Amino acid sequence: MRQGDKIYVAGHRGLVGSAIVRRLRESGYGNLVVRTHAQLELMDTPAVRRFFDEERPEAVFLAAARVGGIAANDAYPAEFLHQNLMIQSNVIDAAWRAGTKKLLFLGSSCIYPKHARQPMKEEHLLSGQLEPTNEAYAIAKIAGIKMCAAYNRQYGTNFLAAMPTNLYGPGDNYDAETGHVVPALMRRMHEAKEKRAAAVKVWGSGKPRRELLYSDDLADATVFLMERCDAADVGEFINVGNGAELTVAELAGEIAAVVGFEGLLEFDASRPDGTPRKLLDSSRLAALGWRPTTPLRLGLERAYADFLKGARHA
Ligand code: GDP
Image: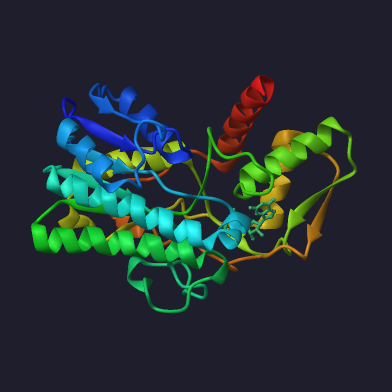
């Protein structure tokens, strides 16, 4: 991927896509193509093919997806499976047809088995049963990895796949019910602080461990991969994590400190814990020369500033 290339960022309004656009612009990439959902329905195969025929992007970042936290994944498995399969199949196939030179498909660490050995290495894919709360999403993402690999093998494309750990950052979904743990707790704690409430509910036991990566760090990794690595270097896909994990209880404490919520944390056992641990082994990416730079506290502070900006506009 080079500066003058025409680059399509699918999902440019999402947490990941917006970070990729910021990162590309900062590095002087001026020929970006984006479409809102209203302008282009990525589940519409003929519309996606037409778009690729007209624009012929040289590089594609596939960050468009139906996503959500543990409750949304659990409540809408049909939509998570159907929409993700449609979006990714349409974009990957249309990119090949239009002669796109390089594509990066984004997935998630939930592709790994629920009880995978920790830290999870790329070769642990498909070595055991998935976590039921996000099985539909995981199956779609695994299909995306395999589709890129199949196109590379059969058609000689250069399509990469990156699997980031749990993400957070500006532009996240701050809905307390459908969001991921960081934005959902940020909202609940912020509202509790405003109302001077004594306690905030934290879902599950607080014992699961999660590894968190700031969205701008992921964006940096994706641009690194697109600039410097080919599918042959990367293998079927590559993990993108930061190497550190903490319990949900510890994470809730960090968010409370950033938000300034001083009340109690009440663990709600009626809500699911999900996977007990999912720490990625990111040594393959480290060996290629990439490392994250944003410490959790700083990332949470930036995310909270973004939340407050939105809260003022709401
Ligand atoms: P997951 O990694 O796919 O499980 O994604 P989530 O970000 O939705 O959840 C991570 C962990 O945080 C799970 O163990 C949840 O039970 C826990 N958690 C605690 N409070 C919340 C909350 O308010 N929202 C979400 N989504 N998860 C929460």
